[in-house]
Image (cartoon, rainbow, N blue to C red; front, side, top):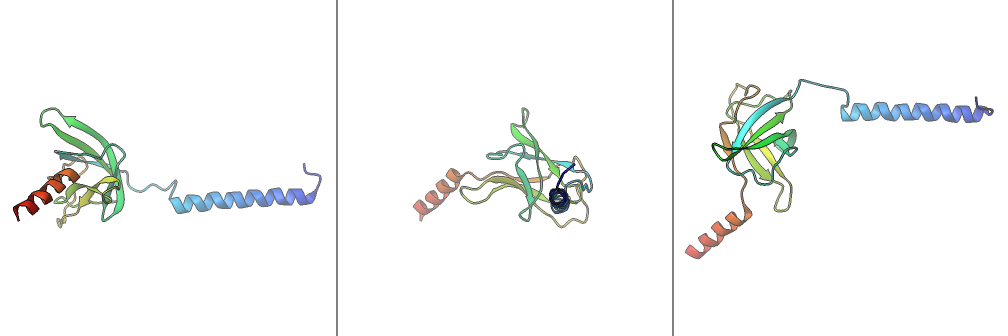
Length: 150
């Protein structure tokens, strides 16, 4: 036990402040709160360049999930992805998915382009429409080719 009451008061105040920080951090980050369980949607791309497991899945610029798994389909030679989506989000069944990037030097991510259907994709469903990653070299080649024709 502390011999000085002042030391005891300082120790108690330190514990109260530390507890307050832990409670505040828990509330701000949502740690411990769990809404609906995440679910998986599948997509198949001809080229998934720049994306891999752990990459963001975004809708309207907001992170709504991540790439859970990516494998090469030996029959179709396409990149098959399993996307882990926030369980509280209902993705319309006519939505498309595309590989996008944050500018020329930014990170690459998977973007969900929502459709208008009132019905949602069921867990384990496949996106019917996908858009592959754009290659900077391919785009520059097209621009130079178009300029040469003019």
